[in-house]
Image: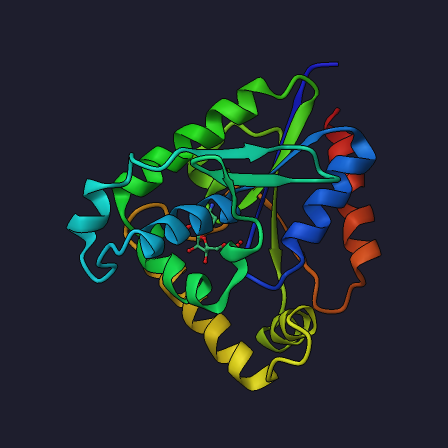
Amino acid sequence: AKPVIVAIDGPSGTGKSSTSKAVAEQLGLSYLDTGAQYRAITWWMVTSGIDLTDPTAIAAVAGKPEIVSGTDPVKPTITVDGVDVSGPIRTEEVTSKVSAVSAVPEVRTRISELQRSLARAAADGIVVEGRDIGTTVLPDADLKVFLTASPEARAARRSGELKGADVNATREALVKRDAADSSRKTSPLAKAGDAVEVDTTELTLAQVIECVVTLVEEKR
Ligand code: C5P
């Protein structure tokens, strides 16, 4: 069978990662978390003392760190200059700064190239999750899914993951990040015209996975 390319986009807290990993695992496909790549370059910039209020400073070093993503859905990995950053990229500091870094066009060009080359290399196909995969990175994807959920549902899921985080604070941070990601000039978070929208508010994770697996199988 020819490799199948699946793009899964949407705001945070919609179950993109859990769904994408499970779908890739069930169907024997590779998996790429593009948010982790933007977090990794943000982590590197924070660690390197780059002024993140200055897009020119960000652009000037966008090509410096070497970011490597492992695409096994069971054990996805991410390194920066050989260092495993899978833990540090999930801190609140990185989460609060990633939108400023990912809005810089030089950063997006660089990271999008990594994404396209990983997608090309996936022999059996790949599930790529992010914000602009269906619109910009892989516009020829075989299937595009856009996951949504109410802000309340998204905040509840995210604070569940963060074990004990305050739901209201989580919702505020999440809404703010989505607004920044949706309003930036270069490839904002958006639903592609040919994407299938799945509202996950009233669905269990298992139901969302089943729905996407069925959509992929229809394309194969
Ligand atoms: O998915 P996750 O919440 O880990 O993404 C972190 C951030 O990375 C997003 O808030 C967004 O700023 C950026 N991102 C992006 N384009 C993508 C994936 C993520 O700009 N394709």
